[in-house]
Image (cartoon, rainbow, N blue to C red; front, side, top):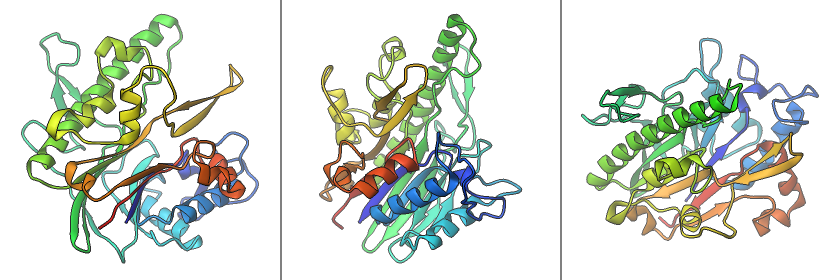
Length: 332
């Protein structure tokens, strides 16, 4: 069984309002990439993944005018993907949905949002004191996580697809505003991940095998604001002790201060004329899933030998998105 997470940069811009791929030579929302080039690159990447289920981050928009699930299913049909049925959770207002694309011959799935006294549904608000002023703050998700109950042959488990809020200080004009907005965004992101961790603990307490996957826009040692708050949001969701989730790439990053560790994204910094790489995408698993001989892989065009030595796939990965897929293979 293969499960993947893949953040596709502005997937939405490749479709018209009817959910049909646009194609052609007009520019996509990716730098120096046309819609047709990005579409064909994505088709090649999804086909190479050959996953039973892909948690698509930044999936096509669902709104009054658009149907993201229909768009994804049309994409899957065009490229003859096994994962050809789409499941959405709560739609959001960002034009970047979280949608599971899965093989209906392998999985039976349903959107199954949960709630508890200390962890409401992800489309609601979470009460927490963000700034330690003894006054509760209300936190919400701009992109509510997708909670999925999955039934495979002889194996039932749960998945939570995540796209945590970016910490970019949009709208800041001065260094002081950058700092203020960055700290506020970091507080909100940590609060969201505390909320998510409470949901994780709820499933662990019920002995339900669990996979938490997606783009956390964060990681150990990613920026200076981590020092201010003590932990990254990734560490919060992973947890500690016997109830900790596991991701080997996160473990590598957490256990070394200096040295190389895997990365899952590559961004061009125009003002510096260079690329920045970061580990942002994770597949975290609970102990029952870890017992199924899991094998993780980041499909990085330069760090993964299999991808690097297949020039067509390597180029497709670079053209398709600024993130690279992460896969988890399980023996079930």
